[in-house]
Amino acid sequence: MSNDVGECQHESLERWRELLRLDMGELLKLEKQRRGVLEDKLLFVNAANLAGFWWCAQKSLLQAREDELAFFTSYVLQGAEVGASSSIEGSDPLELLRHVERVYKTHGPDEF
View 1 (cartoon, rainbow, N blue to C red):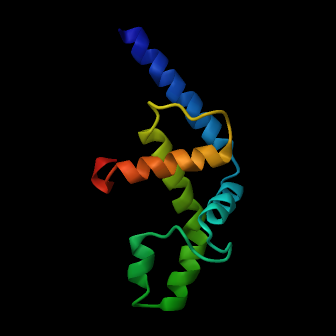
View 2 (view 1 turned 180 degrees about the vertical axis):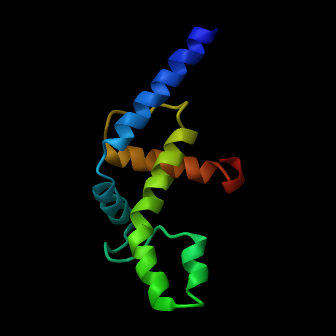
């Protein structure tokens, strides 16, 4: 039984290593294209960026642009971790993005 757990943990670590080798900037461009969002438009932001808008709109926007890649990376890695029990076909970046999107559509924010 403990051997099964060790194998599962090893597979999970290998999946993380594969994801971390991806060029997240290129993957973000692909996700924006897939969703029909212009490359210069924000898609991934967090609540702190939005709350900062009331204090300084320009600072908030600039910070959100700086942070977008980190938010997207978190989105992909967290989605991949939640769905780690199901397989992601091959190494197709579009399949990875579809998989992550399915995970988020089937899990509420309090389930992560």
